[in-house]
Length: 357
Image (cartoon, rainbow, N blue to C red; front, top):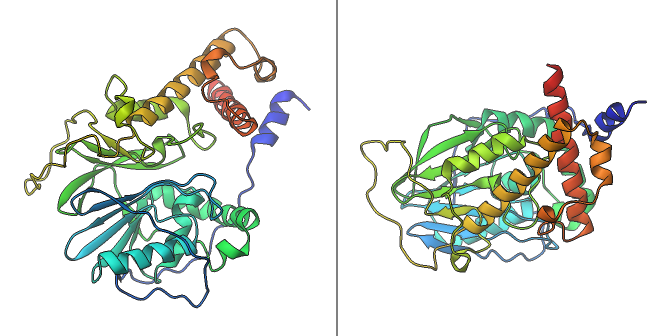
């Protein structure tokens, strides 16, 4: 068996059968509707932080006993609540629903899934059947293909204590690139990136306040994971919204979901756009430093693969060499080294496939 064939088999990810899911007509849930606690969950704190009028952010929690959780963003106006990436399991979603009941009661709730990773979307199952769940068409497709397998993995990793009652709930509303959403009185533009971090990534852009919600495009902690996407389109997506120079690290925080001070865009707001500006000051969560770290790693990976393939090296020869000093800031653990190797092999294989097409 050739090295390429071996590599291809190693990279293949088992795909579960399509979910047979029947979705009723979407009817928005209410923030003050009592969560169904018939399946009990362990206590779970929800640390929502205000970042602008009517907008809250729950920071990511790496390596928590309840599972690796990505940032969650909540918008609320007098009638509506929108939630971006509700979390990794039903228990996380129920805890968030309880927070909404206390802080923004009486609103209808709609969810947004930025991309098809389990830590972002499996908490969909905490909301009543028919709750509007918005996503790109590609995200829904990938969730239907992969989330059953991801659910089993999460169940094995976290155990029944955290994953009880969690199931795969697919988006039932499709978002289109360039579409505008009105969230907490402001207009946000839907940016679609396919592929980038995954096969289909969504980010949200607010031109007036120059705030970019980057979703999975920014690795807020540790090494970026490109094993479901493509490196060069990911770099292009970051270049679209990031300033040319890194932000002052004193203003950066672990909230890489929020990029404050992204460059202005040629996109035009609808004529009814809200002219309110976001608050200024160093206390505004800012992920610019993490965004530039993500950008630098991907650029180094892209350059390594281009140079090595141009020199006629095989991927196994590259893997046998110690990583160069440029990668040392990210390769701080055996897990990071393994992820870097997977990133390298995944992108290498895709470029070999491209060369034959």
